[in-house]
Length: 448
Image (cartoon, rainbow, N blue to C red; front, top):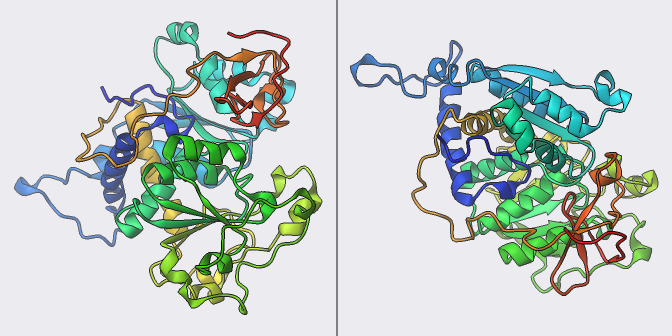
C-alpha cells in the first residue's frame, strides 16, 4: 500500500518534498493519458506487441471504481470543486457534493465536526472548503480513532481552502506548473504579487517554493504583506527570508533597500500601480522567472473601504510584458478581477489557464495515492532543502486562551476551545488551528 494511503492533506507541509515529486511523476502519467481520446491532437504510440500504452485512459478510468468522493464547499468555487469532481470521475469513481451551505444542515446550525463525522460514513474521501481558518484541521480531528474504528476504514480529508490560511492542492498545481515551465524550482526568482495577507494560495505556495529552494520576492501594498506567522515559519523552518517591495519598479532598482514595514497611518492610502513608466527599469526581466499574481480578496476585509483603496493597484498588462523577461511566466490561481489584463492571455508567458488545467491530473494523482490505488515511486534524488515534514507543536499546548483571529474556527464552532503553543522565547503564542500569533498569555485553563 502507498505510504500516502489514508493520509490527510491539511497543509502543504503534510507532504514531504519527495512525496510532492512523486505526485508530480504520477501527474505526468495521468496528463499523458488525458491527452488521448477521440478528439486528441496527440499521436497515440502503441507499445511492443500491439498493447495499449501504460497510460491508457481506459485503464486509468478503473483505478477508483466503486470509490466515492464527497466535496463539501461552504464557500464559492469553480476550479477546485469541478477539478476534484472531474478527477474522481476520470478515475472511475463517483461524487456526492454539497455546493451550497444553505441547502445543507449547516443552515440549521449543525456543527462542522458532526457534518464531517456523518459524511465520512457516506464517502471514501472528503474535500472541504470553509471560510474559517483551521476548519480542515478540525475536520481531521473529528475523525478520531473511535470514529475510524466504527467506520472500519480511514477517510482522507483534503483541504480545499480554509479561510485565508492554506490551499495545499492549489499549491501542488502551482509548483507543478512552475516546474513544467522552467524544468526546475530551485534557484528560481518568483515574485508573489497582490494581496499577500489574505490569499491562502500565496501562503501555501510560499512554503512550497521555500522548501524547494526558490527565492521569494513579495510585492504588495504595506497593509497587505505576508502575515507575520507565515514569514516566521519561512525563516525558522525553511531558512527563507522573503524580500518585500511596494512595486515591481522597486524590485528592479538594484541599489534600493528593501521596503520597511509601513506604520499604521499608511495602511489606508492608495498604493501606486505596479508599473510606473518614469521609474521602471528595463532590467526587471533578469530578476524574475515567474510572477504569481493574486486578486484583492475583498471578501476577507473587515472594512470594505480598505479593499477599495487598494483595488486595481497592481495590474499586469502589455506594458508590463514589454518590460519583463521573455521567459518570465505569469501565473494566477484565478479567478481574476482586474489584476491581469485580457490582452495578456494570448502571450505565451501567460500560464494561468495551463495552470488551471493541471488541476485535474494533479488531483487525480493525489486521490489515487490517498485512496491506496497507486504507489509512490522512489524519488531519484531528494531536494537540497529539508524533505521531512516539520515537527510542529511538539511541546505542551496551552488551553483556556481565546484566539484573537475572528475568523478562526475556534471562534465559530460551538464547544471547540483554542490550543496555543509558545513560540520559543518570543513571548508569543501560536494557535494550532489558524497559525495566527498573539501575545496574550492570560489563560483561564492550564496546559494539556
